[in-house]
Length: 361
Image (cartoon, rainbow, N blue to C red; front, side, top):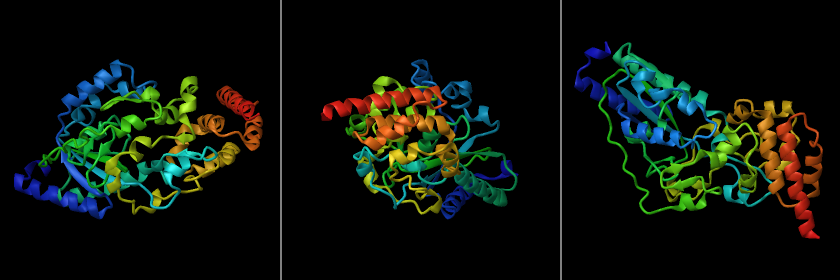
Protein backbone atom coordinates (compact mmCIF):
# COMPACT_ATOMS: atom_id res chain seq x y z
CA UNK A 1 0.00 0.00 0.00
CA UNK A 2 2.84 2.41 0.80
CA UNK A 3 4.21 2.19 -2.77
CA UNK A 4 0.90 3.54 -4.11
CA UNK A 5 1.04 6.76 -2.09
CA UNK A 6 1.39 9.98 -4.07
CA UNK A 7 4.02 12.60 -3.29
CA UNK A 8 1.33 14.80 -1.79
CA UNK A 9 0.13 11.98 0.45
CA UNK A 10 3.69 11.24 1.54
CA UNK A 11 4.25 14.91 2.33
CA UNK A 12 1.11 15.01 4.47
CA UNK A 13 2.19 11.81 6.20
CA UNK A 14 5.62 13.30 6.99
CA UNK A 15 3.92 16.22 8.73
CA UNK A 16 1.72 13.83 10.70
CA UNK A 17 4.73 11.75 11.73
CA UNK A 18 6.33 14.84 13.27
CA UNK A 19 3.10 15.71 15.11
CA UNK A 20 2.73 12.17 16.43
CA UNK A 21 6.36 12.17 17.52
CA UNK A 22 5.82 15.25 19.68
CA UNK A 23 2.65 13.72 21.13
CA UNK A 24 4.67 10.62 22.07
CA UNK A 25 7.25 12.65 23.98
CA UNK A 26 9.95 13.27 21.39
CA UNK A 27 11.17 16.85 21.22
CA UNK A 28 11.81 16.63 17.48
CA UNK A 29 11.38 14.21 14.60
CA UNK A 30 12.99 14.56 11.18
CA UNK A 31 13.43 12.53 8.01
CA UNK A 32 16.73 11.72 6.29
CA UNK A 33 17.83 10.01 3.11
CA UNK A 34 20.22 7.07 3.19
CA UNK A 35 23.33 8.44 1.48
CA UNK A 36 26.09 8.39 4.10
CA UNK A 37 29.05 8.01 1.77
CA UNK A 38 31.04 10.92 3.24
CA UNK A 39 30.46 9.63 6.77
CA UNK A 40 31.42 6.13 5.69
CA UNK A 41 34.80 7.44 4.54
CA UNK A 42 35.35 9.12 7.92
CA UNK A 43 34.35 5.95 9.74
CA UNK A 44 36.74 3.84 7.70
CA UNK A 45 39.61 6.19 8.46
CA UNK A 46 38.75 6.21 12.18
CA UNK A 47 38.72 2.42 12.26
CA UNK A 48 41.94 2.15 10.26
CA UNK A 49 43.65 4.40 12.80
CA UNK A 50 42.49 2.09 15.60
CA UNK A 51 40.72 4.89 17.42
CA UNK A 52 37.82 2.59 18.30
CA UNK A 53 40.01 0.68 20.75
CA UNK A 54 38.46 -2.62 21.80
CA UNK A 55 35.02 -1.79 20.37
CA UNK A 56 35.31 -4.49 17.73
CA UNK A 57 31.60 -4.23 16.99
CA UNK A 58 32.27 -0.90 15.29
CA UNK A 59 34.04 -2.77 12.47
CA UNK A 60 32.21 -6.09 12.65
CA UNK A 61 29.29 -5.23 10.38
CA UNK A 62 31.21 -3.78 7.47
CA UNK A 63 29.25 -1.30 5.38
CA UNK A 64 25.88 -2.18 6.93
CA UNK A 65 26.49 0.58 9.48
CA UNK A 66 26.83 3.27 6.84
CA UNK A 67 24.46 1.81 4.22
CA UNK A 68 20.99 1.50 5.75
CA UNK A 69 19.59 -0.56 2.87
CA UNK A 70 22.19 -3.24 3.52
CA UNK A 71 21.10 -3.51 7.15
CA UNK A 72 17.38 -3.42 6.35
CA UNK A 73 16.70 -4.21 2.66
CA UNK A 74 14.24 -1.82 1.07
CA UNK A 75 15.12 1.13 3.30
CA UNK A 76 14.94 4.45 1.44
CA UNK A 77 14.37 6.85 4.36
CA UNK A 78 15.19 7.10 8.05
CA UNK A 79 12.83 8.73 10.54
CA UNK A 80 15.10 10.14 13.26
CA UNK A 81 13.91 11.34 16.66
CA UNK A 82 15.45 12.94 19.72
CA UNK A 83 14.33 12.99 23.36
CA UNK A 84 15.73 15.17 26.16
CA UNK A 85 17.17 13.34 29.17
CA UNK A 86 18.74 15.97 31.46
CA UNK A 87 17.02 15.73 34.87
CA UNK A 88 16.02 18.91 36.68
CA UNK A 89 16.59 17.30 40.07
CA UNK A 90 19.94 16.05 41.29
CA UNK A 91 23.26 17.45 42.42
CA UNK A 92 25.14 20.11 40.49
CA UNK A 93 27.66 18.36 38.17
CA UNK A 94 30.47 20.83 38.82
CA UNK A 95 30.09 20.43 42.59
CA UNK A 96 30.32 16.68 42.18
CA UNK A 97 33.41 16.84 40.00
CA UNK A 98 35.04 19.10 42.58
CA UNK A 99 34.40 16.76 45.50
CA UNK A 100 36.71 13.75 45.33
CA UNK A 101 34.76 11.90 48.01
CA UNK A 102 31.76 11.58 45.68
CA UNK A 103 31.33 9.59 42.48
CA UNK A 104 30.25 11.09 39.17
CA UNK A 105 27.80 9.17 36.98
CA UNK A 106 27.09 10.49 33.49
CA UNK A 107 23.75 12.31 33.49
CA UNK A 108 22.26 9.98 30.87
CA UNK A 109 22.60 6.99 33.21
CA UNK A 110 21.07 8.45 36.38
CA UNK A 111 17.60 7.11 35.63
CA UNK A 112 16.22 4.09 33.85
CA UNK A 113 17.83 2.62 30.75
CA UNK A 114 16.65 4.69 27.80
CA UNK A 115 16.70 1.83 25.28
CA UNK A 116 13.38 0.30 26.28
CA UNK A 117 11.57 3.63 26.68
CA UNK A 118 12.65 5.02 23.31
CA UNK A 119 12.06 1.73 21.52
CA UNK A 120 8.52 1.57 22.87
CA UNK A 121 7.78 5.14 21.76
CA UNK A 122 9.28 4.56 18.31
CA UNK A 123 7.19 1.42 17.93
CA UNK A 124 4.10 3.43 18.87
CA UNK A 125 5.06 5.96 16.19
CA UNK A 126 5.46 3.19 13.63
CA UNK A 127 2.03 1.83 14.59
CA UNK A 128 0.49 5.24 13.94
CA UNK A 129 2.16 5.37 10.53
CA UNK A 130 0.76 1.94 9.68
CA UNK A 131 -2.67 3.07 10.80
CA UNK A 132 -2.61 5.86 8.23
CA UNK A 133 -0.47 4.45 5.41
CA UNK A 134 -1.30 0.79 5.73
CA UNK A 135 1.30 -1.99 6.08
CA UNK A 136 4.82 -0.75 5.33
CA UNK A 137 8.36 -1.98 5.74
CA UNK A 138 10.22 -0.67 8.77
CA UNK A 139 12.52 -1.47 11.66
CA UNK A 140 13.03 0.42 14.91
CA UNK A 141 16.48 1.13 16.41
CA UNK A 142 17.71 2.76 19.61
CA UNK A 143 21.48 2.38 19.86
CA UNK A 144 20.77 -1.31 19.29
CA UNK A 145 22.29 -2.12 15.89
CA UNK A 146 25.02 -0.93 13.49
CA UNK A 147 23.50 2.49 12.78
CA UNK A 148 25.26 5.82 12.20
CA UNK A 149 22.84 7.62 14.48
CA UNK A 150 24.43 11.05 14.58
CA UNK A 151 24.97 11.51 10.83
CA UNK A 152 21.40 10.35 10.19
CA UNK A 153 20.05 12.73 12.85
CA UNK A 154 22.11 15.56 11.35
CA UNK A 155 20.74 14.83 7.88
CA UNK A 156 17.23 14.78 9.35
CA UNK A 157 17.76 18.32 10.70
CA UNK A 158 17.94 17.37 14.38
CA UNK A 159 21.29 19.10 14.95
CA UNK A 160 24.89 19.18 13.83
CA UNK A 161 27.79 17.00 14.95
CA UNK A 162 29.91 19.20 17.20
CA UNK A 163 33.65 19.27 17.62
CA UNK A 164 33.26 16.78 20.50
CA UNK A 165 31.39 14.46 18.07
CA UNK A 166 28.08 14.74 19.93
CA UNK A 167 24.96 16.08 18.24
CA UNK A 168 24.03 19.69 19.12
CA UNK A 169 20.77 21.55 18.53
CA UNK A 170 20.60 25.34 18.68
CA UNK A 171 17.55 25.33 20.93
CA UNK A 172 18.25 22.24 23.01
CA UNK A 173 22.00 21.76 23.39
CA UNK A 174 23.14 18.13 23.41
CA UNK A 175 21.51 16.42 26.38
CA UNK A 176 19.24 14.11 24.38
CA UNK A 177 18.90 10.53 23.17
CA UNK A 178 18.45 9.47 19.56
CA UNK A 179 16.33 6.80 17.93
CA UNK A 180 15.47 5.77 14.37
CA UNK A 181 12.89 4.05 12.21
CA UNK A 182 14.27 2.63 8.96
CA UNK A 183 11.45 2.61 6.40
CA UNK A 184 10.61 1.87 2.78
CA UNK A 185 8.32 4.91 2.61
CA UNK A 186 9.74 7.52 0.22
CA UNK A 187 8.95 10.42 2.54
CA UNK A 188 10.23 13.93 1.72
CA UNK A 189 13.57 14.53 3.47
CA UNK A 190 14.43 17.44 5.75
CA UNK A 191 17.30 19.85 5.33
CA UNK A 192 20.47 18.81 7.17
CA UNK A 193 21.45 20.98 10.14
CA UNK A 194 24.30 23.43 9.66
CA UNK A 195 27.43 23.40 11.81
CA UNK A 196 27.26 26.22 14.38
CA UNK A 197 30.38 25.49 16.43
CA UNK A 198 32.27 28.34 14.81
CA UNK A 199 35.63 29.08 16.40
CA UNK A 200 34.65 27.65 19.80
CA UNK A 201 36.99 24.98 21.18
CA UNK A 202 35.71 24.75 24.76
CA UNK A 203 35.09 21.00 24.53
CA UNK A 204 38.59 20.32 23.23
CA UNK A 205 40.16 22.33 26.04
CA UNK A 206 37.97 20.73 28.72
CA UNK A 207 38.52 17.05 27.86
CA UNK A 208 40.36 15.61 30.89
CA UNK A 209 42.39 13.10 28.85
CA UNK A 210 42.81 14.94 25.54
CA UNK A 211 40.56 12.41 23.82
CA UNK A 212 39.25 15.11 21.46
CA UNK A 213 42.46 15.22 19.47
CA UNK A 214 41.19 17.97 17.16
CA UNK A 215 37.91 19.40 15.91
CA UNK A 216 35.51 16.52 15.15
CA UNK A 217 38.19 13.92 15.99
CA UNK A 218 37.75 11.62 18.96
CA UNK A 219 40.20 8.93 20.06
CA UNK A 220 37.98 6.56 22.02
CA UNK A 221 41.01 4.91 23.60
CA UNK A 222 41.55 8.08 25.64
CA UNK A 223 37.90 8.88 26.33
CA UNK A 224 36.76 8.40 29.95
CA UNK A 225 33.37 7.15 28.75
CA UNK A 226 35.17 4.42 26.82
CA UNK A 227 37.53 3.64 29.70
CA UNK A 228 34.77 3.29 32.28
CA UNK A 229 32.06 1.70 30.11
CA UNK A 230 33.44 -0.06 27.04
CA UNK A 231 36.88 -1.20 28.19
CA UNK A 232 36.85 -4.54 29.97
CA UNK A 233 40.50 -4.77 30.98
CA UNK A 234 42.74 -2.56 33.12
CA UNK A 235 42.47 1.18 32.75
CA UNK A 236 45.90 2.38 31.50
CA UNK A 237 48.09 3.58 34.38
CA UNK A 238 48.82 6.96 32.82
CA UNK A 239 45.11 7.70 32.41
CA UNK A 240 43.92 6.70 35.88
CA UNK A 241 44.75 10.01 37.59
CA UNK A 242 42.90 11.84 34.81
CA UNK A 243 39.70 9.84 35.36
CA UNK A 244 39.19 11.68 38.64
CA UNK A 245 35.98 10.64 40.36
CA UNK A 246 34.10 9.69 37.21
CA UNK A 247 32.85 6.14 37.84
CA UNK A 248 30.55 5.79 34.83
CA UNK A 249 31.01 7.94 31.76
CA UNK A 250 32.06 11.58 31.43
CA UNK A 251 30.10 14.73 30.58
CA UNK A 252 32.82 17.40 30.65
CA UNK A 253 32.61 18.23 26.94
CA UNK A 254 28.87 18.77 27.24
CA UNK A 255 29.09 20.68 30.51
CA UNK A 256 31.28 23.37 28.92
CA UNK A 257 29.43 23.58 25.60
CA UNK A 258 27.89 27.07 25.24
CA UNK A 259 24.89 25.66 23.40
CA UNK A 260 23.83 23.74 26.50
CA UNK A 261 22.69 27.00 28.08
CA UNK A 262 19.60 26.32 25.96
CA UNK A 263 19.21 22.73 27.11
CA UNK A 264 15.81 21.79 28.45
CA UNK A 265 15.10 19.51 31.37
CA UNK A 266 13.39 16.24 30.60
CA UNK A 267 9.76 15.68 31.40
CA UNK A 268 10.24 11.91 31.52
CA UNK A 269 9.97 10.55 35.06
CA UNK A 270 12.01 7.51 34.01
CA UNK A 271 15.09 9.68 33.47
CA UNK A 272 15.07 11.14 36.99
CA UNK A 273 17.93 10.05 39.35
CA UNK A 274 17.48 6.81 41.25
CA UNK A 275 19.23 5.26 44.26
CA UNK A 276 21.09 8.46 45.07
CA UNK A 277 23.40 8.05 42.07
CA UNK A 278 23.37 11.78 41.38
CA UNK A 279 25.74 12.34 44.34
CA UNK A 280 26.92 9.00 45.76
CA UNK A 281 29.73 8.56 48.28
CA UNK A 282 32.54 6.53 46.76
CA UNK A 283 33.13 4.46 49.89
CA UNK A 284 29.46 3.46 49.92
CA UNK A 285 29.59 2.47 46.23
CA UNK A 286 32.71 0.40 46.81
CA UNK A 287 31.04 -1.53 49.61
CA UNK A 288 28.16 -2.65 47.42
CA UNK A 289 27.93 -6.41 47.23
CA UNK A 290 27.18 -8.01 43.89
CA UNK A 291 23.55 -8.33 44.95
CA UNK A 292 23.52 -4.63 45.86
CA UNK A 293 24.91 -3.79 42.43
CA UNK A 294 22.32 -5.90 40.63
CA UNK A 295 19.48 -4.47 42.69
CA UNK A 296 20.49 -0.81 42.43
CA UNK A 297 21.27 -0.97 38.73
CA UNK A 298 18.14 -2.90 37.78
CA UNK A 299 16.67 -1.22 34.72
CA UNK A 300 19.75 1.01 34.42
CA UNK A 301 22.32 1.38 31.66
CA UNK A 302 25.02 0.99 34.33
CA UNK A 303 24.36 -2.72 34.71
CA UNK A 304 25.85 -3.47 31.29
CA UNK A 305 29.42 -2.93 32.53
CA UNK A 306 29.06 -5.62 35.20
CA UNK A 307 30.07 -5.72 38.85
CA UNK A 308 33.77 -6.30 38.22
CA UNK A 309 34.24 -3.21 36.04
CA UNK A 310 32.10 -1.21 38.44
CA UNK A 311 34.51 -2.01 41.29
CA UNK A 312 37.46 -1.27 38.99
CA UNK A 313 36.07 2.17 38.24
CA UNK A 314 35.27 3.02 41.84
CA UNK A 315 38.72 1.83 42.95
CA UNK A 316 40.34 4.29 40.54
CA UNK A 317 38.16 7.10 41.86
CA UNK A 318 39.10 6.17 45.44
CA UNK A 319 42.76 6.29 44.51
CA UNK A 320 42.24 9.78 43.11
CA UNK A 321 40.28 10.99 46.15
CA UNK A 322 41.86 13.08 48.93
CA UNK A 323 43.39 10.98 51.69
CA UNK A 324 40.79 9.55 54.02
CA UNK A 325 41.21 6.70 56.49
CA UNK A 326 37.75 5.41 55.56
CA UNK A 327 38.86 5.15 51.94
CA UNK A 328 41.98 3.20 52.90
CA UNK A 329 39.94 0.81 55.03
CA UNK A 330 37.41 0.23 52.24
CA UNK A 331 40.22 -0.50 49.77
CA UNK A 332 41.98 -2.85 52.19
CA UNK A 333 38.78 -4.86 52.54
CA UNK A 334 39.09 -5.76 48.85
CA UNK A 335 42.83 -6.44 48.64
CA UNK A 336 42.03 -10.14 48.23
CA UNK A 337 39.08 -9.72 45.91
CA UNK A 338 38.46 -12.81 43.71
CA UNK A 339 38.92 -10.68 40.58
CA UNK A 340 42.53 -10.05 39.46
CA UNK A 341 41.27 -6.92 37.70
CA UNK A 342 39.79 -5.52 40.91
CA UNK A 343 42.84 -6.50 43.00
CA UNK A 344 45.20 -4.72 40.61
CA UNK A 345 43.21 -1.48 40.72
CA UNK A 346 42.81 -1.70 44.49
CA UNK A 347 46.58 -2.04 44.89
CA UNK A 348 47.10 1.02 42.69
CA UNK A 349 44.53 3.01 44.65
CA UNK A 350 46.17 2.08 47.96
CA UNK A 351 49.51 3.29 46.59
CA UNK A 352 47.92 6.61 45.68
CA UNK A 353 46.41 7.00 49.12
CA UNK A 354 49.73 6.06 50.74
CA UNK A 355 51.53 8.73 48.71
CA UNK A 356 49.01 11.30 49.92
CA UNK A 357 49.68 10.20 53.50
CA UNK A 358 53.37 10.94 52.97
CA UNK A 359 52.56 14.32 51.51
CA UNK A 360 50.52 15.13 54.61
CA UNK A 361 53.33 14.27 57.00
